[in-house]
Image (cartoon, rainbow, N blue to C red; front, side, top):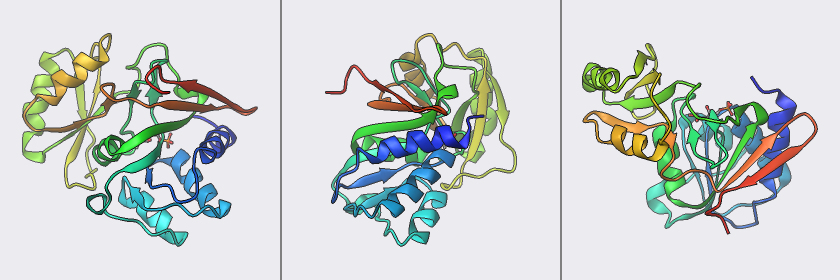
Length: 223
Ligand code: 5RP
């Protein structure tokens, strides 16, 4: 669990990527909550703002920031979101907060994805954090059996329903040596809505906060 000051440092560093009038995508989680508060305090006026969850929408609107529907926006300049794990290639595991589907959609609509996290989220190899997978409720057992066949140990996040009305399986034990291939393989299971692996399209910039400051890692794809 990262400290609040580490998250604060990462979130503050992300604010430097925001320019007046930019169309922004906003992710979900405790680090993003801090970013939203800092954005509101900063007095910067973004263009259109699209949110990845009901939780972030409530927080943005609580600050008087209007939230637009993605369908009404041609594209976004910048997406700011957290992660549960990142490797040095900026491939991510996301979905600890259950907002992975909208997060993947808003990330896909954005020119640049700046990921903010505390330093504990940087890992040598992905997979200690159980991989969240959003599934259509009627397919939960079918998908779980298929994940078991692939060597995973799925666990149903009971009592949790996503903003899209679906369920989450948290999967341990999958071989993540080839994250892109795994994401493609899992995407093909009928009943899977979204896989919390962001490897086909990871982050462009990772800002890792610690107590003393921020480490920035740029994707090899970026600039
Ligand atoms: C939500 C996410 C979050 O970005 C992730 O869980 C990190 O959250 P936090 O900033 O609270 O550590 O993917 O679905």
